[in-house]
Length: 187
Image (tube, rainbow, N blue to C red):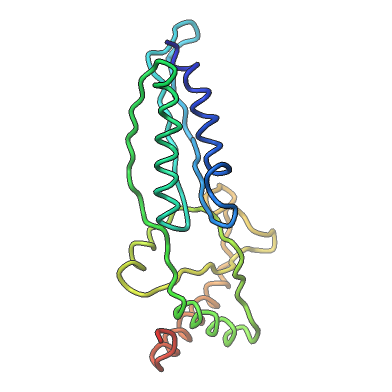
């Protein structure tokens, strides 16, 4: 069997997982980011290798994505091929502590003189901070450091950091530490 042919329905099923099985109110993503097959244009490759990432806001959603990805890959077997799945468990989801969130929101408001927290959905970037918040109450927040040209991707060659934002970030951290030392946040 031609593994390139087998890859097509597997890719379709993989890309459909997010829309088919995860609630639109819950963040989750399955991304196939690398497809590699063959070495020349006139020989059917012996295999196709797919690489990608699973991301979610909740551990339960991540497990659902893993199960659904296994089902999608099994399509190759249903069509007479063979598949192997190697899963490297990355960082867990970041779990912000509600009390620490409140402290950071208060610290931001005190530093800026106005409510300064946006609580909308965030991106699906990978982040190892989730390892820390599993052991110690904490919260991750984003600090606006875009220059006059507007935001750029953190992983792009045109990335620019307006360093004046670092002064604001330091002041927020100092105020958050002061509030925490007074007993705020963890109740």
